[in-house]
Image (tube, rainbow, N blue to C red; front, top):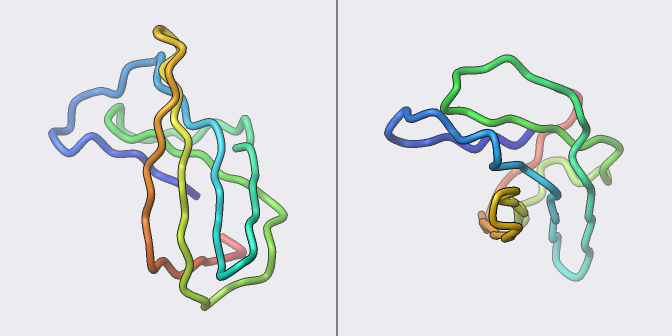
Length: 89
């Protein structure tokens, strides 16, 4: 599950969407669109999940999240490195 959180606890605008994630493990890349499931959270947290990923649990990898501003049709990317991936939430 990916969570995007406004650090000032300000509501995330509805036009901001989590689109896709890219998981990089060495020379391997897994790309997945997020599921359309709705998670009830605080208005300053946006959560999405992608399913059926590779069994890389425990390895340290890089995750890149693609975010879209629907109002401006602009895409942005946030990169996090050295993450441990959990499965079976």
